[in-house]
Image (cartoon, rainbow, N blue to C red; front, top):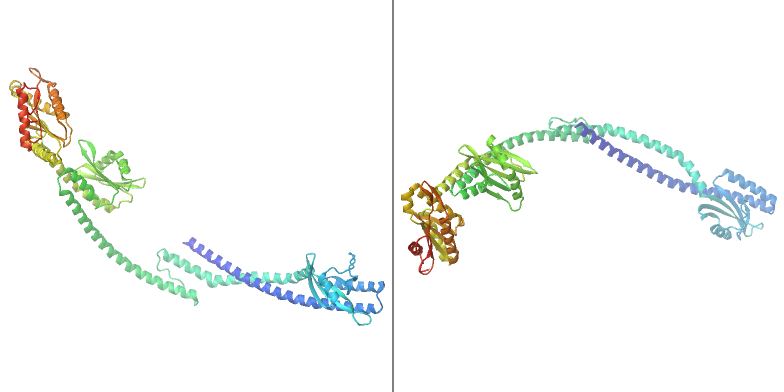
Length: 591
């Protein structure tokens, strides 16, 4: 604060100093310029009168000499007079005497042999016998020339003129000598005035302002009781009074604002709590309204965005000690996919940390904020959600997100159990393929689709030859092994999609419904199945056991316009294969 105050004071003092220097310099400069102008003007007027007087004196002396006639002796005396005048008047350079034709009759300095006046201005004045002062320039120098005409002996006409020359350099030298002392006095006056004004400003302006700045800095720092001194009766004193009133009003306003902020903070906290609670209830309700496992996973991430912002998120679930990414959501306009890849590289490490502390945490990497949320299933951390955002996450965001993920674990578990129950209900326990009921559910839907799209639809029905004998000779455990192995071998030949439905028809009978193929492909697949089953071997206490299978093929056509008729055709083809000696593939006669 002190440094700021000194800096403010220094800047103010500098500005005032510069302003005073400018004012004093301009004032004194203008005074000197104006004074110099008028002084020079007056000086030149006096000088012109003086050289005219000197010229007149010389002219009178010349008239006296002229009365006796121009002789060398008399001109020598005139020359001495000129030298005396030039010695007394330093600014006078030359004295000429010339006739009206411009011929020089006398010159005060004889260093140059001048016979005619070579100055046009002077020559014109001499010829016209015009008395006065003429200003002219010769060889780059300025001169003043006083021309005083004189008469002839008879006083009848002008015979010539006396010319007195003054050089400007000598005038300027004289003026400089005259200016020197006034300029020194002016400079002294300038320095004295400056210090007197600065002293006055320091006492009347700078120091009071310095005090005001000190109080203002203290007030800005929070000391609203730092009142300024208001004893002065000038504008600065009035400023101090206004400042003190302002501090009092600010103090009152601060108290009122603090109360308002407290009330607003309470209201906002309650409003946010209600809003978060409503959002949390809506999110959990959305997740709990379905038992489909994929839909549950998708809703978990979708509903989470209603609680905390993110550009991408990934749901991870642990299955048999293996961490698996179940669902990912990210904005197309962001770098979410790349960031998720980065999260995948550290997923196992982050999951271990969550299992240890069972609490969410936030990390920042390359200006990207990651929020790691544990998912509790049966009171254990069995999953997590990694969300990321360009902006930071507040503690409030972390708390509500953790509350949400702490509850969604039970819905993940319910969906998982529901999926397992559906699978058990649809799967034959012995062979692991569709049971009869679920196969017919699937077959009816695929048949209707085939009718609608007019696609090729075929059925392969087969059973294990002499299976009753296998049970009777080797026992039911071996029979069960044969059925399970046959189902596994056939499953390896099929695609794992909805176009091929494989189920246990009953006992040792199996059925395959295939959509979107050809007759040739069906026959090739049936032959592959027959050959694959015949190549299987089962070790028993009575030696290795080998089995064969009979297969019947039927395709949807005009005679098989329903699923029941198509199944009947396939069953007929199967009996045809058995009648043909078993271990073969037969096609219905109506095909």
